[in-house]
Image 1 (tube, rainbow over the protein chains, first blue to last red):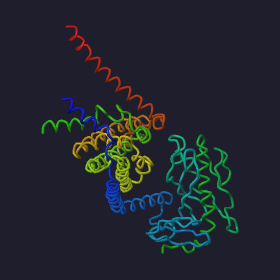
Image 2: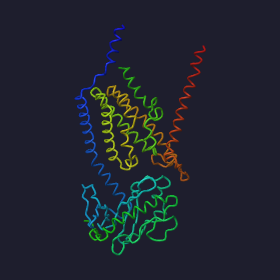
Image 3: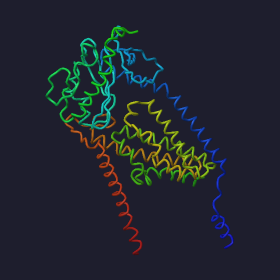
Image 4: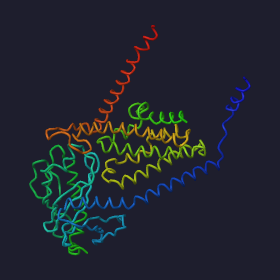
Length: 238
Length: 215
């Protein structure tokens, strides 16, 4: 009886047999191959649906800031001043270029320009989409693309009617030489708005309001000097 | 056969109640507290975790005899990461709004200790079917836990459930409940409730056994 017990104990006391190197490599290789197949399969299988979802999300964001728009086309404003259309397959944006959307109404006439802007808010970056109307050279609507601002405080920028009233005709006129905005877009303390290029901040959510102002300003400063001289080329849907 | 079925059923229900990952083991609290701001987010996070749990435990269990123990953690993590990537694409394909709401926590399922724990403690030692049943039980338990938090936080913090307004216009949302501290409040309240249930069960059982001893 005791013999039976001793033998296994002695066996366990000796160092456990090591797995051969070949077995380890083989297993890791096999697992990687299986996992690679699953990942590539999942990517291929969902690619169309993901791309369609992204396009719908962008269209919705543009239609929200330019309600009369029916179709959109994506463009890049290049550093040299040129404007080029983005093909369906292109996803990478060349450095220095600014992406914007030209929105057209049912008749194929330009209904407005939409562009994204981003600035640091209270919790994280606030990404907004704004609509630009060439006739009045003003911002006519904004929508939030993404933000993580405090619910009930910072997120009032999408619900507060007085705040949204700032964006019915926010002045973003360019200087006479088209080099930059004539007046910097800026959020000012609640109740002290006196010019058409100022944004009346939400009291209690000043940081988020300022982020919206800065996002519009930065994006407009980069985009409009390149875009305005080329507006004629975008006037009708190509 | 019957006892085997019984054991599998027992392992399946273990994760739902006795070893509930949220309320009993208090595991994987990072996603639990972070994404349980609404019932929809909580439910989808729970289901995503359950999918990863079941698939990775199934695959680990299938390969269990050929995984050398020296490289087992690496193998488990690769397998888990694979299914997380698949879920990541699937959620992007279903809804971008949901994908944005869940944020980095989908990718972070890779390091959820419930999944690695199941792979190491159960799937590596059991055949695929019981391993997947056990994983499914844990996944359901995790989903129930997340939903219990998410539903309470959404009702109190926003006055809605699945986006449907529950109260009249006079309801003032209790905003703190959808902020990070609210997660701790609601989790604490649920843990208190389960501890009270446990105590009550013990108290009810105690007089009987005492009586038995005295007689």
